[in-house]
Length: 543
Image (cartoon, rainbow, N blue to C red):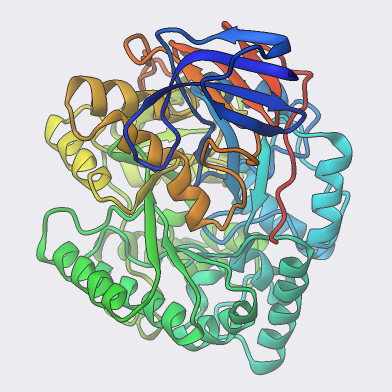
């Protein structure tokens, strides 16, 4: 018997959560041909995995890399995902996707989410989701990629950044674009209800838009409103209502809200009650107690009514600026937000750090806290922040959270102990000069610290969270499990050596301990050598 690749003597963890077992794996073309003790097999390439773990390729279930995929530089920009063992990337999250696109309103997208783009920007050589996916296929992909359609993108396409509810005609146009996108291969609908323009929608709009998905049975993937507020449980109840009425799966993005308060307990109770009623609900998280997002989120959403040009114009009006400063400091949120100027989250504080500076004179401020930046500029912190937003044309993003706090780390681990929690990196700004350590070591942190050092769960359970669980949540066929007939997305690593040195202060350290990575039967990482030109990935379309 002959085959293309034989992986022999490995300790196989198949992705299902079952105990590991000794086995060989033969690969023919793109697929796993056989799993077992294979004798007398001749292969073009034999990989000796003695003493190593052989698992399915890891799936990054939540990130913002879909604006990077069209760049010819994407294999290099994203190489740290290969060193982490990632073979499949799910993108288009938080209501933002690069397709379908209205070319007349691209500036809104680029200005609000410029930190998602490659440094050179995007030409948007497509209009529909079908054209975008075809474009990715034509240029070739370093990883398997699957794309959600973003509600914010749909809303911007149809009505721009209007601070009002969508009317029936506008909702109908959004539904048409969503259906065409799903038919083209998009794997679901993402919501970004903390961002403009999605923040201006109400539950009725979401309910009607999501009705398109009933026939496709694709997941609703929301960034809910008020993640870190006392209203988090109400926000979770809202998206449960949308999913339940339309009989579709629900995947709650970075389900970390509420902390240890009664709010989170209420949210979890709402989820468990819905699961008992038959609603399929999953969620994901990132393995650091932090979040990074556009700095424009800090401003009152009404400032953006009519577009980004209006935002910058208003912000330079002294009377409006007084109102903005007052609201950032004093506004009291209420539920439902659309009856109270749309605000729920108050993000500004002295300890957030800013990132994404492009002007030479401000590069030194990357990764500095706003209180320290303000001190250097000799300005009041909020005034310093607003001035920098104007200087950098809104292109900044901020980090909040407690990355060095042991109690916050413990809380993060408690989130991952939930059996329905899969793993994402939630990366923005990857092609700028202040990346997040999750881009370099998120998966390794789970395997080294969560599993090996802290014993939070077994290695088999960790692998399940990175493979078959996200594959099921996102309806990916023939991926996430090592078995005959599945695609040969495989990672071979040393469980004793896998580690990350990446930190927020010094993030750019590649994961250690990943020996080989195969995508669709092609070796893309071989004993530390990354084959950037392999372009072994596939554009995964909804089936």
